[in-house]
Amino acid sequence: MTRIAGRPFARRLSAVTAVTGVALAVSFSLAVPASAHVEVESKGASALAENVTLEFNAETESDKAGIAKLEVVLPEGIEPADITYKDGPAGWKITATNRGYSVGGPAVGAGEDVAYAVTVRQLPDAESVAFKTLQTYSDGRVDRWIELEEPAGGGHGSLAPILELAPAEPGAKPLSPTPSPEPATRTPSSPAEATETAPATTEAGGADTEDAGTNTVAIVAVVVIVLACVGGGAWWFRRRSGTGTS
Image 1 (cartoon, helix red, strand yellow):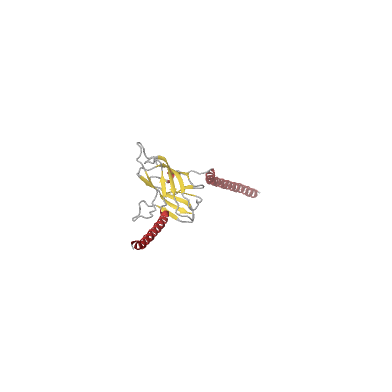
Image 2: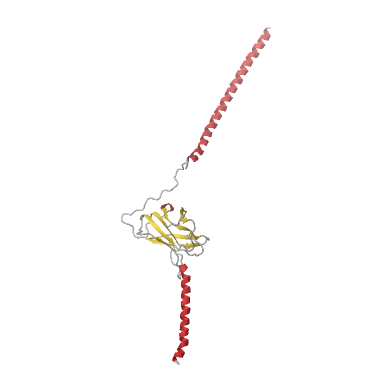
């Protein structure tokens, strides 16, 4: 009797175990995409360190489209001109933006992660720096890795990649600001441009010469007219005097 009564309980226990296993499997499969993220690493990075290589790794969240561009918002203390592209996917290039930079090019294969590296002129004097990132796919989808803290209640927080910095080395000092690529006084960027400004000066000089020539012609004309009048008057006077005498 005891054995018979125990069979239904065993069956119920097996059913509950199976259902629990399926639920855990489903939960795990749904949680996998949420674990994707963008990371930044740098060996021995410290505050005020110079010429530091930053290595980024952007994991994909799509199995239908490839990553085509990553736009980074630089933290305070780092300017776009302080960043130099070092390495990345084939055909990718870096472009400075108003708030940082973007790297992109031909989309990588669907389901593939992207790794790239840049060199920063100097890290700021801080304990950590965040590199907020917008991750764009070939189908237009955008993942926003811009949060600085985990959202309340857990879940997929779209955290920004954050680099922890060691204290500054003794004697480390901030470098002078990166010079602006545009000079304060504008100069022609090419011989062609310089040549384009030359005709204006030449035309101005030509105009003055033309005015001077016109004035000279007018003066000569007046002199000729005066001489003609004087000569004509003298001839008329002589003719009249000769007529009167005869």
